[in-house]
Image 1 (cartoon, rainbow over the protein chains, first blue to last red):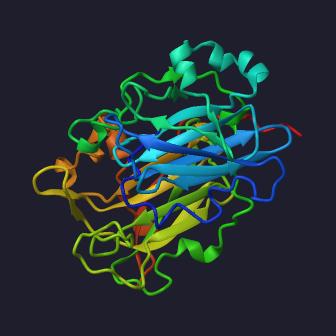
Image 2: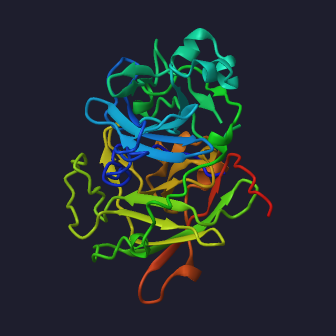
Length: 153
Length: 220
């Protein structure tokens, strides 16, 4: 296997593209934004991360990509799925970290989800987006007290 | 043991506050991890694999190889993204303040798609080494960043390709974060005389193997 190496600090001219954050077009019915911030171990925003999402249902599959801005903010415009799978790349991450975003208003789906079922309450809580005005909020804590639950593939 | 670097690698200082402190949770894979994007809505154009098309300054190179999964099967029709510094060791990125000249004819950004046999090929120029502030008198060896998708989310990989014999290897904590010497060697391309273009360009070969399961394609 080929080993991973960090994405480094200088990818913003190379990997992001204008439609990257639009998993679905802005005009798509029932679409919404998932917005979040990436934080490091001392709660400082991470301004040089890249977020990628992938989601699959019988009706639709879609990819999203968004770099964080100077305040660590990212956003993806998408539609519901049972969950989104997420990769986080950044300077200082020698390999990506992988997580999932679940939606708090899909209680039925979440209650029967085999992955959520294996987690304790604290670990599960980090995977649940919060409702927001135009969609949801999902912050990512790479390290520390509020550390996001990351998965080994 | 995984070939990948540990997330916490103190010699690379930026890992200290960014590496998760908890072990990752083993995941029962679902169709979401066993599939991945194909970028049919963002097709790669032929000229995107030629980073020299605007007349870049530098030593012209062919960089090529085969993309495979960890069972040895080639991965056809898969998007590869690359980016690198110019010949002077500077990225065409506003955040890069290294006082080396910019080349107005080189963005250092390219894409291509593997062919039916999993083969890919870029034309570019040799990137330069550059200083960074990780430790005293720190320099990154010349490298090309590679972004690979394979067939599935599980296979997603971002890595760096190096050039053989670089005297900067020993002091580079990024390359040396790969602890297994044999795995580290797989990040170093090989000079490939057979792929050179006489009176035009030298060539380096970099084969890539992606770990991780993917969905078994349906039998017809």
